[in-house]
Structures are given as structure tokens and as C-alpha cells.
Amino acid sequence: MGKIICITGASSGIGLATALRFAREGWTVYAGTRHPERDQSLYKDEKNLQFVELEVTEPESMEQLMRQISREHGKLDVLFCNAGFGYIRALGQAPFSDIHRVFDTNVYGVMHTIRAALPLLTKSRGGHIIATSSVGGLVGQPMNEIYCASKFAVEGLLESLATYYKPRFNIDVTLLEPGAVATEFNKTVLDHIADTGGILEDEYKPVADAYTAAFLQRNAEPQTAASVAGVMWELVHMETKPLRIRTSERAEAFAAGKVSNDPTGLDGVLRTRKVMLNM
Ligand SMILES: NC(=O)c1ccc[n+]([C@@H]2O[C@H](COP(=O)([O-])OP(=O)(O)OC[C@H]3O[C@@H](n4cnc5c(N)ncnc54)[C@H](OP(=O)(O)O)[C@@H]3O)[C@@H](O)[C@H]2O)c1
Image (cartoon, rainbow, N blue to C red; front, side, top):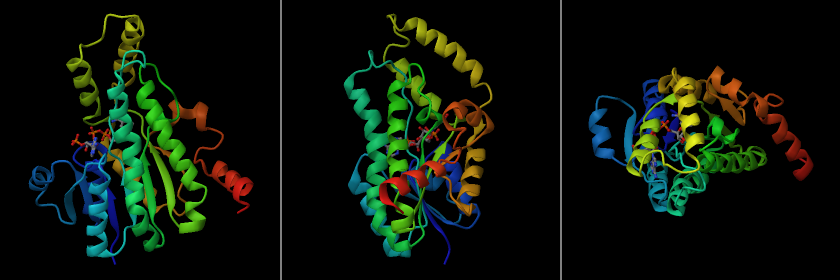
């Protein structure tokens, strides 16, 4: 039987590129989107690719999709929790409703997605959960504290699951850690800033200005989404799945201070498993 992957946030960027790559390689792809009709008609000539309605902040949305995959295939090989968005405002500036919005999608969305998929993954005997974190899930960054906190939470969640999902359920767990990627991500961030008064004239302005100037310089050549999809393709074929994988050399260099002692994260997982579970 062919392989099945379910991807959240597949309407654009990394999720869409991964959906297209896997479908063209012959996998059956369930591509989660908030605009299924629009996306299905855009990609109607693609074989193996089915866009399905998915809002990750609504658990029922994901549960319904899992029932559909279970009915149609009885198994799921890879769950790719990718939906998410960036957010730039200082903690001292952000309304709490914005902080909730970021965590609802970037953190609780991943939790809902994994919880809904777990019974099917467990039944599949050999599943793989991958979540898109970021180098911002490893390195805290100025004006990005809310986004980074959400990705640190995803890191903590998956690192914890990795300590026992493999030996208990035969499910691998991986954090995909991109640096800058050319997607709709920056537009979403910039639109939000523009819609909420631009760079504010307050005590954070010097930091925001310095950050913006350096950002434009650092991100002049972002990685393509197709290249990240290539990393995803390699990842699912690795014999030993890493806990962590950066998607480019620049991402690797940026996060080196945090991960150079244990680049794949597997040493840490094995150590914790031994100390806390004696496994
Ligand atoms: N691009 C980068 O530089 C970068 C770097 C590191 C990490 N990342 C991470 O990569 C992941 C993918 O982002 P991207 O760069 O590919 O950006 P993107 O092109 O903006 O794609 C984000 C996807 O997430 C979906 N999404 C957002 N909120 C959702 C929700 N509540 N329910 C369902 N879907 C939702 C979007 O759907 P709509 O089209 O309906 O909004 C879209 O399909 C994110 O987790 C992001 O944090 C990106």
C-alpha cells in the first residue's frame, strides 16, 4: 500500500511545496487548508493531492479529517504539523488577544493536530510526526519574543513526546527548523504591523528599527519552499529519524550555539529516556 501524509497549513509556502513534492513522488497527500475549493481548483491536475478543510484552532476540524483518512486508508504514515504564522511586536506592546491568537495556532493547533491523529498513527505501527518549528524555536530573537515563545513551546512538546513515542508506539518525532524561507510568512507579519499602526513611536522604536534594518540584510536570499520540501523528502527516508533538523546551512549556522553539541537532538532524547524511564 502507498504512503499517506497529512499536512496542515498546505495552502501556501512550506506546506504547499511539501504537498506538491510528495504527491508528485506518488504519496497520497491530504493537504489541510482553510480554502479547499479554491486550492483544489488551482491544483486540479495534480494526482494524489486532495485539499481538505482544516482550521487547526478547532479540534473537531482535525478529528473529522482523521476519520476520513481512517475510512479511506486505515492508516497514516506522516503527520506534518506545519500551520503557523509569525508575529512581531514586543511583549510590552502586544495586546493579549494577539498573544492568544499566536498560541492558539502555533501551539494549541499543534496539540490538537497530534491528539486527533494519535489513534490512527498508533494503529499504523510506524508513523512519523513532524512539526515545523523554526530557528526561532531554538534562539530567542528581538521583537519576536511572542513568536519565539510559541515555537519554544512546540520544541518542548515534541522533545518530550520523543522520549517515549518511539519505544512505546513506534512513532518517530521530528522538529523541522527553518531559517528564512520565501513564503507568505513575511507578508502576514508585515500586513499585521501595517494594519496595527506600523512601527510604533514608543520606547521600542530603536530596537524595532535596528531589527528591521538587519532583517532586510540577513534575509536577502531566503531559502525556497521547494528546497524545504526537499529536506522533508530526505527526512522521511532517513533510517534513523532525527529529533531536530535545520533546513539550510544558514539555519544551521544561526542555531549552532544551541545545537552544535547534539545536532540531531537524539543524544539528549536517549539520555532522558535512560534517566527517566530506564529504557
Ligand atoms: N517562512 C519562514 O521564514 C519560516 C521560518 C521558520 C519557520 N516557519 C514556519 O513554517 C510554517 C509554515 O509557514 P510558511 O513559511 O510556509 O508561511 P505561509 O506561506 O504563510 O503558510 C502558512 C500556512 O499556515 C496556514 N495557517 C495559519 N493559521 C492557520 C490556522 N489557524 N489553521 C489552519 N491553517 C493555518 C496558512 O493558511 P492560510 O493561507 O489560510 O492563512 C498557510 O497555509 C509556520 O509554522 C512558520 O512558523 C516559517
